[in-house]
Length: 219
Image (cartoon, rainbow, N blue to C red; front, side, top):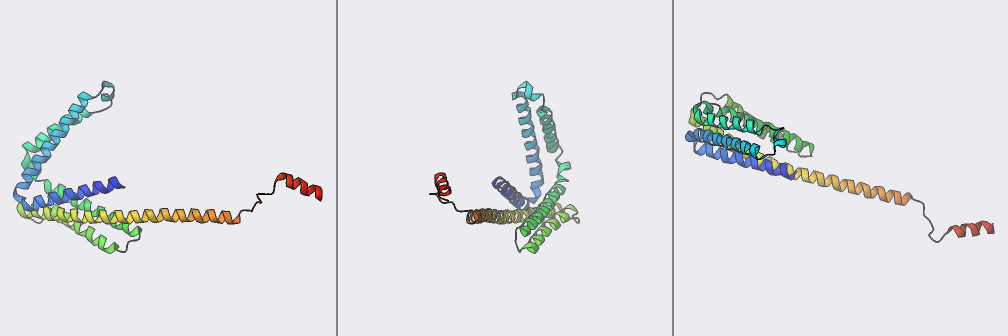
């Protein structure tokens, strides 16, 4: 639960940082994004190749690190060399990310409702806004490049902020839900134990088998 929470918070923070970057530097962001992605792929590919040569032969037989590394290096080089080609698909990729974030929030809203929250409608509205943002970016009505990237920045900021809120709120609800279940289970066990104790026959600790024999002789 904690690892999921922190990974979700990290993703939300990444959305916020990327959103402010796109909003403040819309004209140069596409070029910088392609450069960062290209070098990241090259570095990851290089690490895969190095990992392959550092592995034992027996382990390397069942892995494709060398091939995967070479493919990543070539893909990174292609992204850097053909920035114009990849810049054109950046809005599509970001639109898909924002739409996915919207549906993720919709699922979180459903989960919160199932946990007893009364804010189901507000969650649906927040999720719908993210989805609309993504659809507008995906099918943009002839925005200029600057306006489009600024809109993507606003959408990512919104997605990051709402994801942050959903993660913190939902984790709190889950914690309360789990705590209530644990307490309820403990109370049920205690009640069951008391019930069994109350219904159990009482035994006189001073009554021994010899006493039983002596009582029989007297009769």
